[in-house]
Length: 213
Picture 1 (tube, rainbow, N blue to C red):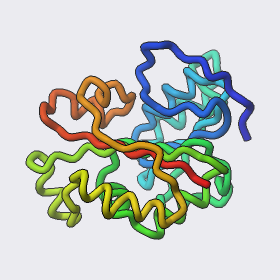
Picture 2 (picture 1 turned 90 degrees about the vertical axis):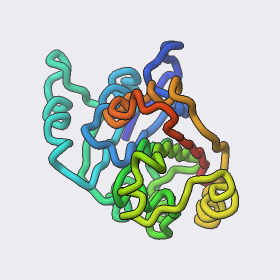
Picture 3 (picture 1 turned 180 degrees about the vertical axis):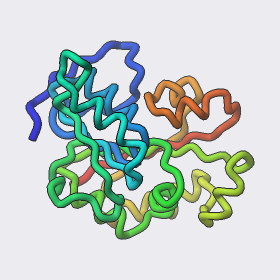
Picture 4 (picture 1 turned 90 degrees about the horizontal axis):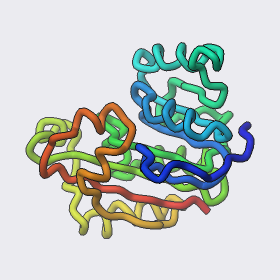
């Protein structure tokens, strides 16, 4: 599906994404596809798949990707409309990296609560030793309405350690790392949502990294 990739990138890359060195990278909740398109351009020997449940934000970037390379198109990127709990069977066992950056709505609830169906779906598309990176940025004050609407728990270290991480481990993922990111780190993530959140002083951004068996 994708040719091996070199592992080189500029030291001051605008992406904090993990790099396995080769293979297929899947971005779930890709939104307008900004992260995927930028990463695909910077890593031409990797294959990127941007997935979102809503089709409309994908229309513009999909058209751009299908242009001839001379006109800005990219042959190593694909955008797909799909729900995270029902990912395409064509991706089964294909993903060397999975990224979920600043999820919102039902996707946010799924990853924060460790939804069983979603975790099974993520594991299903994972290649051996696939890295799963999740970056969550919800603010208890600014996002109070959404938190209450979704019935989200407070993302305390105790909740992550005693409730959420064990759910991912029970699903088959092994914890690699977790913690918080300061504004200087998460604001460099090349996503439109990260750009919208810039200037939100005090916003807590948590990250979790897991590995598939």
